[in-house]
Length: 199
Image 1 (cartoon, rainbow, N blue to C red):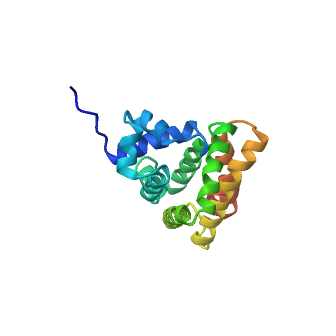
Image 2: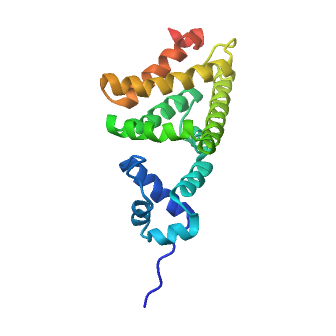
Image 3: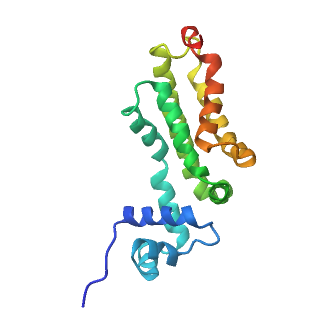
């Protein structure tokens, strides 16, 4: 008789994430996650205790995910602002369709109203903003942005614009979400570009 398949926690978390892209919070079950991971629901109960505990561990592991992703993009793009634009385009994956964005917003509601989840969301937001500030400081030092730019204020404005941009794209549905987000980031950056780059 063959032994039951084992999966690492990272494989289970990846399976949970894939299931979450298809299912809203009310539809997501341990059985769905287990099927995605090639395991039994009982195996997940033994390891994590409940769906909530599994998702909390997933959230904890993802707390530095965006920041690490932004820093990873740095190796693929020539300039700091091109990294920022690429990040905006990648963030549009949350709005692969209006239905996908609605699912993601449903999970965000949990993150905002459950203190245990919110602490991980807050850690993720702070780490993401720090990574953005680093990019903007680089853009100032390389002459992409004006010297008098405040990188912390601009990072906050970009963060706010990206969040709102996802919602407004879902309302207007005009073109691709990636272009919509990138255009909104460019609009926020425009007044801060070094004069030689505005021409």
